[in-house]
Length: 320
Image (cartoon, rainbow, N blue to C red; front, top):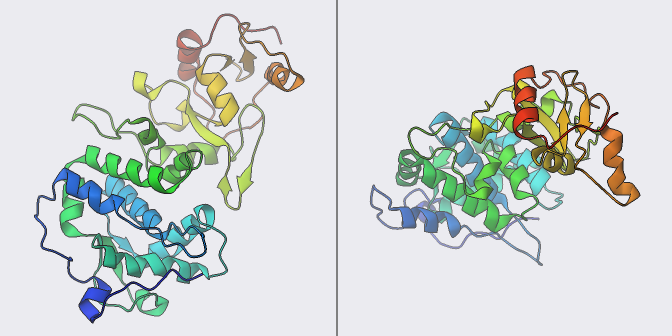
């Protein structure tokens, strides 16, 4: 389904080749947040269309990772189409066409520019080497203040996606999902920066399934209910390395972080004696006391496992 055609007459205004108003190069904080929060979601007959927010989130992820939001259409065509397929409503529109809508139309919101004049919604001119990026003053403000970039990404994802889906969106665009807890990927100059690519790498290394129970839920090409867990907490010195990561389902991630589950020297799952459950479903946790279900290309390192046992795991392990 096609989003509604932007209003306006005249080529330059229609294509968004110039800002709607003269903006200060400093682009104050409140102005940055207002410009991004004002992105509209086109709706027809109540159908959600998060095309523009997804494009901006993808650009923000690139800016945080590479220092530039520049996104060639040769990359955006597949990356944005994948995001729309996973996090947008079901559509009969072709993949390239779905991606072309926000890539060309976002110019009308004054936050996106293309390096050449192309018609709205048309794929073929984009394939001639067109690159898009955030508007210059907006990008400069976000680059100069990484905490503002984090705040903008958090505001967008919280405004346009359900809370249970928002972390998955952030991982997909290469941004730290802990932004949703108010933690910035780059706070003070001395604060370590978390890797935006680490969660996806860990999940892939564990064959996209829970290391403890083997749960491998997916919707299309995206995992559902599978998360990347630090063995040694990042906040307490744990690195964003594959040998400090486990892919865990949401339930077992929570139990691992609460110290109800752990790993022994042989990579077998152990259950804390402090854990209890009444129902048959709850008592299935006891059945986890066995070698990890998923093989993993890079199993959790010995040092990280020892740290978790000493600092997180609660009490003694039940006999297996």
